[in-house]
Image 1 (tube, rainbow, N blue to C red):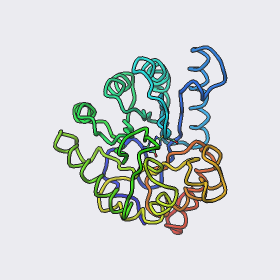
Image 2 (image 1 turned 180 degrees about the vertical axis):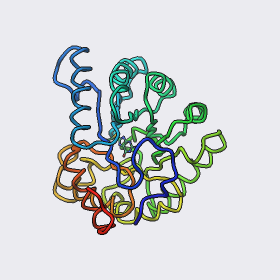
Image 3 (image 1 turned 135 degrees about the horizontal axis):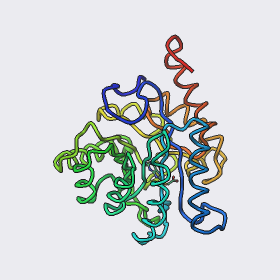
Image 4 (image 1 turned 90 degrees about the vertical axis):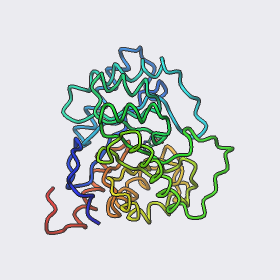
Length: 280
Ligand SMILES: Nc1nc2[nH]c(SCC(=O)O)nc2c(=O)[nH]1
């Protein structure tokens, strides 16, 4: 499976699988230091991921794990804006994982290059920000984020239905003035989907080509790997293995915590996809 046509003006290479390093700036993701410590640590962690081969850094100030408590907007701004300001000078693009238009506007003003909306631009105001700024936007499939664990969602065919619903979101975005060329799609692993549905999506990733957009796959340390003997939050080996399969099945961007290991996995997949043409 070759990557989507390299005709998008995205801020990363389009002839190989791109690695997005996850930078959580939620308090529980740092040892207990002061605010300034946290910002310093965040920048150091971003630089370490870049040194390990990350092509883009995804900054997130609100955990959207199933059942997570929503964070006040002021708190989210206070967490992400200072970090984006520091990272804006680094040589790789910065994406921000946020559901909030206020945060989206603020981080773009602060130098963020990409919006990563786990609610798939369901908020009309988020569609307006994407349309007005023209930045690349990751449109992730989720009926809601965080998903209420009590909310029993049933799919007959998770792949078909996810593609269809992403298609609907794409249309709504285009109606709001978002250019299809700026959209990256994402199946939203773990967001209202079971472990087995996660593996079904991994196996049939190529079917998402139908939407004609680059595809981001975000499986790192997720609960689907309970099926393969690892735990949510501690699934390094399953994550690396799934990265290789996802890249070989057409994922254009892989969103991970452990950059070096997953860079190796995408290199293996890309080399297998094009043994003659692959360049290390
Ligand atoms: N685009 C995109 N953004 C995300 N943000 C999270 S937060 C939950 C976690 O990392 O465990 N997951 C994803 C994902 O799968 N895709």
